[in-house]
Image 1 (cartoon, helix red, strand yellow):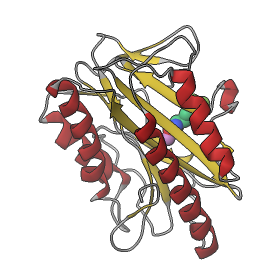
Image 2 (cartoon, helix red, strand yellow; image 1 turned 90 degrees about the vertical axis):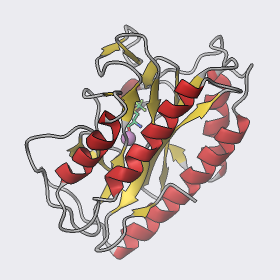
Image 3 (tube, protein in one colour; image 1 turned 180 degrees about the horizontal axis):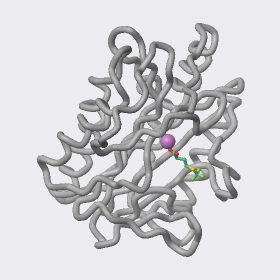
Length: 250
Ligand code: MF3
Ligand code: CO
């Protein structure tokens, strides 16, 4: 395994890839409303990405048929957008999106409420988001990858939620998925030592119930095994010798 260290020039390009993706997410978040289909979300997301002169990196990735992953309620990640899948009041919807800017990838996810949602669903969204921020407190030069995973785990565990184990975060740069893999649960191994210039996509996927998931026959959609709700939050992050820089937040 080797983790790439980005040069100053590459970091500038990663920053721009991140900044543009943050704007895509802002616009998508504003657009989400009951009555919209998951395909409408994909169409809008792809248009926003292309209007920036960028390329959607998920489209055709290992055969994935869309630009945005749109995962509703018990769907964890990789939901395939569909014309007949209509968002309704009370749903939660996870949007995972990425783009390529001048050869550099960004990747980020948010879970949104559709209209008014239950307090339980809102708490799941909030805890998932906060677990990312707990994790990146550890993302600095000299720490180990494990420190990020353990911090996410320790925070989420207090709420009794299930941390998805079958999918992980990842390094990112000239490819969408680079080394290292970044689990969201504490591990025995300490993992690589973090260095300034590493760019990581940290992405807790958290279930209201158990951690177990199923993979549907469509080849993509991941769902909670117990049917409970699931939330996702992800940013592309630059490790520095001080505070980490979140590239996909404005
Ligand atoms: N955003 C996903 C990740 O973090 C990638 C989606 S793969 C796709 O790894 F094929 F579904 F696009
Ligand atoms: Co990712």
